[in-house]
Image 1 (cartoon, rainbow, N blue to C red):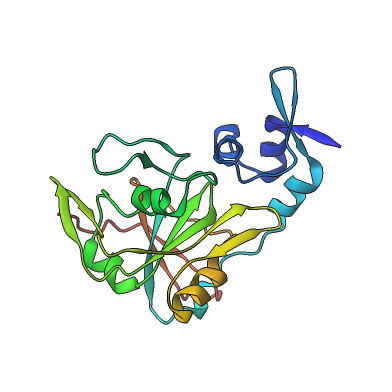
Image 2 (spheres, rainbow, N blue to C red; image 1 turned 180 degrees about the vertical axis):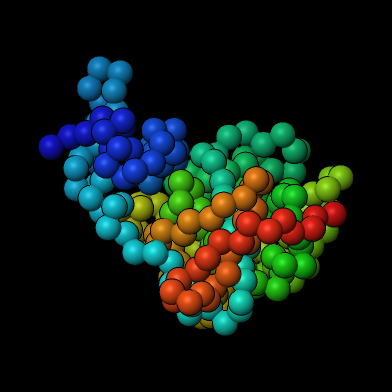
Length: 211
């Protein structure tokens, strides 16, 4: 059985534009074209619907930052080709696309030690090596030593690539990649607590200071 993007979004309880980001990022296998419509196999949607939440309670910090991105597009800056995520990007381009230039509380990002990258609420990449930052533009910062600990090219199975040079980074990426991670913020960076009374993360709506 094949679903339209609208039907798939309805099944998942999200906006059509949210679901289309996954389509355009190239992380959903088995898609087909029917006229000008993209058709999605029902098992693909069922796999997304049943995906477990990220086990943030296993992280040894009280709070982490989460970077919410869109599908990759040409970057306005000269020091990188892309901004955002696409499964087709080589690791070097993907790292450059994700490690800056964000408005954020840099100290809070660094303290978390790990930066999950989410697309439409699913973790598609993980950065570590966030201890050093630099101002890249007024009010924006980048993390020049960031490491692409892992990323995925197929969200459904999922197919993950663990690229961190250290075992701890690979383990953290493996823990988070492909999981659902909801977050809420007015900007690209959200801040999420890793422990709550329910045992799962609660998103923080309080604003964090950026400089």
